[in-house]
Image (cartoon, rainbow, N blue to C red; front, side, top):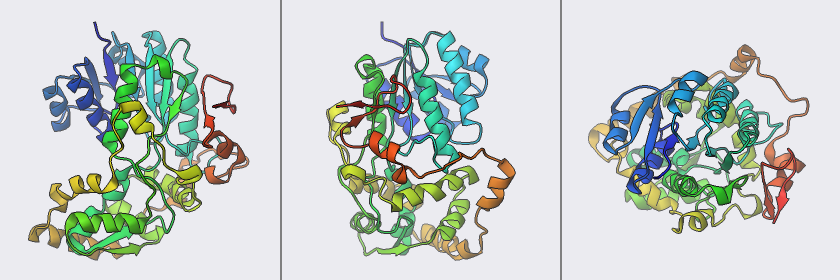
Length: 365
């Protein structure tokens, strides 16, 4: 009898794709959601069992984990991330879960200026410390999705916003990340204590992405570099939370410093784990260009013009005020990942971090 797999964050892009792939392979899936809506209905139609639980409540999580042998854990990228992870770890240990595949981030670092990145590092090590659990970390770099939320500007207005300057990354498709996670969940034991960084097939600058977008939408697209203050406005206009944007400030600094192109920036994790090559950015962009918000219609063009027209007048998230209000703890010596000798040593091409070893060490391969 096949193990039941719990998928947290099941209505998100990665979680939803993961449920679909596991169900296509006939694995029993329990999808954990925050509420019942059209997205959870879709999961039920795929054959998943849908349960509702508060990610901060160990009792509700214990109930969701009842009878589950393997789990995909998506940290809550919002305030109180660590509290939610402790609740999940407590429930997973009590339920005797055998394996956890966890989504992390490439920048995960104990002394990062971003609270989100520091807490992600803590979650990595918290889950690794659960006795008897095969724990595997997936830490992608830049999601292609992050660069394609503005595909409508390219499609409808003929320009592509660039917030990363001339620095480069290898954007990876959400579907490829989900395929890697699915493969690890299907056979977790050989990968216990390991972390894998799925990447796209090649390094790209913002200009490269604009050129790919132009080929997809069928007309010229002008790449336009925009400053971070404009990013704050655009993020607020599109509904991004202030907590996300607060962390992007440091992420973009790391991106400019080359953290996402470090040691070549490209690997074959997707093909090695799944047996299929990573999808190229242009293929991913072609799917986004077909989404309703990016289709080249008169109505969409008017909406895009209106959004762009109000952008200068939309107040951006006030990140300094948010930091004062939240009173986040600060490391005594904060350092960007791209500037930290220990992070660089642990993330080099020959480093194969093993979270079952003492903190701060890495097995070398």
